[in-house]
Amino acid sequence: MDQEALLQKLRNYIARLKAGEYFSSVAKDFNADFRPIPPEEFLQIEKRLKEEGTPKSDLHRLCGLHIAMMTEKVQEEEDECCEGTCCCCEEGCCEPIPALWAMKEGNESILSATMAISEDMAKEENERSIQRVKQAFAFLNRLGKHYQIKETLLCPIARKHGYDRGAEAIEEEDHKILEQYDELASYVANHPSPYPKKKEILALVERMEEMVSRENYVIVPFCHSVFTPLDWEEVHEGMKKTGTAFLKCGPR
Image (tube, rainbow, N blue to C red; front, top):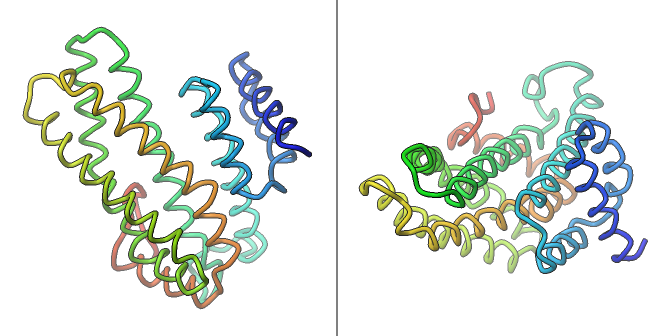
């Protein structure tokens, strides 16, 4: 299927969700159409949607469909491998699950916070919107630990499999995002209103959301398809030390 046809399909899926169709019904059709599509190609199609002016709320709907597809794929492999047992209960069993689950949960949490910030800063300044933005910024203080999983566990192994440039670009962007976040988070926490920094805050939100797309469509699929069982054992052991950012519990 050519890119124009895939682009139109994505528009149709967004329209179905906006019309109120059940998410599970749309997700089922989405999975059938887009599971075979390479993540790099999907990222290019999403970029075209952005360039043609697709609203952020619609891009979030699309990201939700992709996260659901990734979750279903991981869950199927967990079921096949463990046959109903815990993914961490047997040595060598379902190594990818904890790390990929942490990335998925983290991305959903980040998108929830960035969407809240975007929606509130689009409104007229009032006490409620100010407090919601402050709360979302405070919640995102876990972002550094979320990125730490990539930088200390996934990227070093990805380099061993020839993903040097990609890993370096990811780490550079992570550092820029965190530096910008720390500066703005300090401002938001210590000033009565975040609205004087509205332009900078919305630019940061956009960078965070672009990184979520890269994680969903490139990083996670690459690791899932290339890492060996020994690689995932290394990741799993590392996560016992680093912990997770947005999960209530990490690997055991």
